[in-house]
Every structure is written in C-alpha cells, then in structure tokens.
Length: 200
Image 1: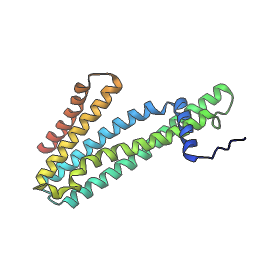
Image 2: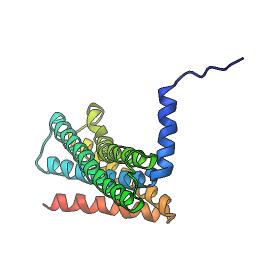
Image 3: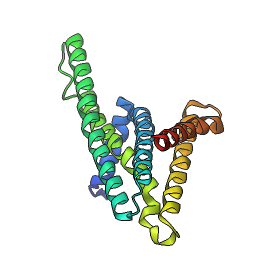
Image 4: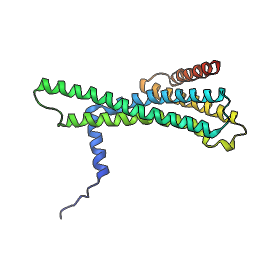
C-alpha cells in the first residue's frame, strides 16, 4: 500500500538549513557575530543609562524610549551592514570559484548555501544587540516594583554586568578557556564603561 507523505514547509526549511549550514559553516560564524554584537549592544545601552542617570532623568518613559530606539537603530544597522558586507564577500568568493572551475556556481547548492548564509548571519547580527539591550532594560518595564528611579538604574546596570559575564562564559566555552576568567574579562569592559560615563 503506497505511503503518502504530507508536505511540511517547516521541515523542508529545517532540512535545507541543516544542509546549507554544513556547506557554508553558518553556525560557527553566527556564534561569533552573536557574541560580538550582543557585547556591543550591552555596552551601548550602558552608555544610554549612564547618560540618562547623570542628566537626572527620572522619567521611566524617557529612559525606555531612548533605550528602545537605540536598540532598534543598532539592530537595523547590524542587519543591513552585516548583510551588505557578508553578501559582497560571499559573492566575490563565488565569482572567483566560478572563474577557477569554469562553471557558474551561483545556481549550485554551494551558491544557494552562500546566499542563505548571508541572510541568516545578517538576522543574527541584527537581533543580537537588540535582544541584549532589551534584557538590560527589563527593570524599566517593571519600574513600579522599585522604590526609586535610582534603584531601577542600579538594577539595570547590575543586569548589564551579569549579561556581560554570561557572554564571557559563552565565549570561554567556545574557546575552551576558563569560564570564570573569560566572564570577568567582559565584566571589566562594562565596569570601565560605567566609570568613564560617570566621570564624564
């Protein structure tokens, strides 16, 4: 008796994604982009918070608006910049490979995997700073539970340092370094940013 398999677009996409990842090594590149841009996102939002706190901004709405618009701008910048850069690099590689093999590689699995990789890496690059910065802003979405706006700022800055530590642990796991030392390295960057911001 013949078996009929229903077409599942999601499973087809997952299968293609796995295939393209094996060809274009998207996972390794994506991890680097994620860690690097999430790190930038946290440090940027630290600057926004220190600037608002130093200026005496006590309106949660202003802090959330400035922080959120900064996050969106960073996400769009990362998305567009990464896509244009990555697609240009990969297009050049495909053209060089096509010339060396005397066969157009653009419509091959390698060519499709290369274009897919540029899109996925751009999405990762755009989402990483946005998500990291939004994590830091969480206390301001729950400001009513804090007694003062200053305690909200301090909590957000504490979360920023914890997020940086988590990113350091993530990088240490990739490089197989000591996780605590790797986490402390990224925390130091956050502390330096806070101190410089307060001094300014």
